[in-house]
Image (cartoon, rainbow over all chains, first blue to last red):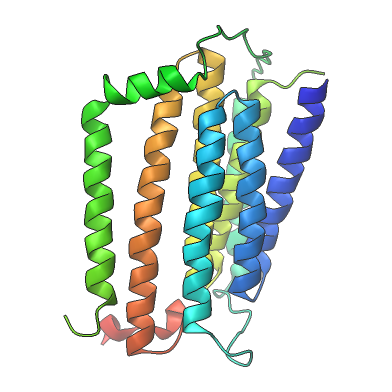
Length: 165
Length: 101
């Protein structure tokens, strides 16, 4: 019962704040709403018995990445007059057709519904120890490649940030 | 009333759609970036839901890598925005038409 209440609470918060993110004129407000959205998604991760990823989501995403976003928004400091609610032409048509497309997908999927409650997970599921062991044994090569990717991104960001190449 | 896999998948789809509408409709480069983060987050929810219902931990490993790639993407993307802003002080992508000649 508690799980159901928490799911609907987190889901409603995520969807509402996601809508606020894409509808604010000022990117600063969008970024702050995105922090709330990512934090409530972290709650959903915890409900899905992934405590490690919930913590990572808060620390890395809502923490580090969003601070970087806010830092850049304040660095380029757009003046109040320059902020315009600019959208593409036929924005409403585009939005309605994308939403309609996904609604059709939902209808097709729900044609033959098979609503199953979550199977009982064994004690090892979602355990940080198990996840860590998997990352460093079966997925050791992708793990190292991810570190290489982060290094490349870091060098790329530094090079692009320089005044003269 | 229990929460089923479809609940999570439906939530994931709704958030992905919101992110996609944001990417296509908005012209502010920063908000387009945030919408991409929303889409990645929606995919993470779907990954974790499938992982939980199938009882396999591989889904959580995939989410871990998605988070790593998203962090790299945010770093490089914001670097590009800062570099662009230095050349032409705007964040609206339809003002940046240098390649169109």
